[in-house]
Length: 364
Image (cartoon, rainbow, N blue to C red; front, side, top):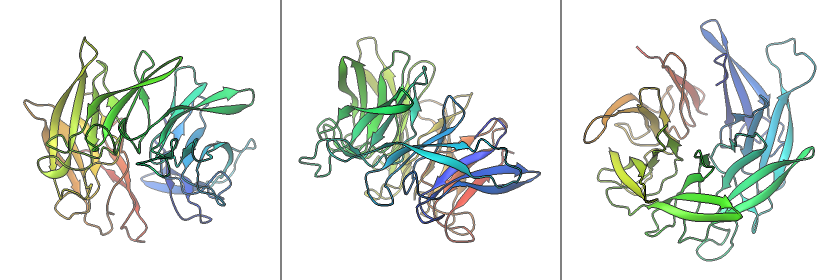
C-alpha cells in the first residue's frame, strides 16, 4: 500500500501468460484495477509481493523466466512521460537472473528487504545452493544484491544443507545490529523447520535460535518473521501443534544470546495438510497480530484472524471465514492494514471469475 492508500500486488498467472503486477486505485467508493506489467520481459510467475524501494519504485521477484526456470529480481517504474489515462503501464528491468546451483533457484514467496543505506537488498531462494542430499536441487540460499555502478551485483550469503535448515520460503528481516533472520520450512534438528540467524562480518555465520519439533510448537514454518521494538520475533508454523492446524509463536532474546520460545496460539486443523498461516504476520500499534490461514476454518478454505495479547495465551478472534464462493478461498499471502484499521489481502482461488480475489475487511 502506498501513502495514498492504493494497493499493489502480483498474480502468478494470467496477463500475457507469465503473471502480472497490478495496482488498485481508489475511485470514490470503488476501485480501479490497473495492470502495471504483464509482458514476461522481467521473468515469469511472480508469487511474492512487490515492495517499494528507497527510490519509490517497485521491486520484486519471479520464480521463473519465459525460457528458463531459475527466477529473477526485477524493478518496475513509471515511464518518464506523463500518463494521461487511468490505466498506465510501467516499464520493467531485470536486476538479476538466478543461475541455479551453486547459485540460487526460485525466490519463492518472500518480500525483498533493503538495508538502511538503500544500497543492499536481501532475499531467499527456495532451492539452489548446495545440490546434494537431502536436496537434489539445492536446499536454498540467502542472497544479497548490492548496487554496483549502474547495476547490481549478487552474492550468496549462505547455502543451506539440511541440518541447518532447508527450503527458506519467505523473506528476510534484520535487527538493529544488522543480523539477518527468517525461517526454513524444513530441515533443522528435527527436520520440521527452523528459525535461523545470520551474522555477517567477514562471511556469514548461521545459528538456529529455534528448531521446530513437530510437537505442540508446530512444524513447517512457511511464514516469515516480524519483530517488535524490543527485538522479540513473531512468526507462524503452517502445520502441527496440538490442534493440527499450525501455530503462532514468539521468540524472546536472552542476555546470554539464547532465545526463549513461547507458544501464543495453536490452530485447529488437519495435521499434515499445512493449513495454517503461510503469509507473514502483521502487528498493529497496540501489539495485536493479524494473519491468514490457508485451509483452516469451518469451511476448510482459510480464514482471517486476529490475536490479542493476554495471559497465558493470546485471545483468538476469527475476522472472516472464507467460503470458497465470491469471497475467495485459500488466502496464502500477508495482509495489509490501513490507517483506519481496515484489512486487505488476496485469495488465489474462488471469486466470481474463479481466479482469485482481492478482499477488504472494514473495521466496525
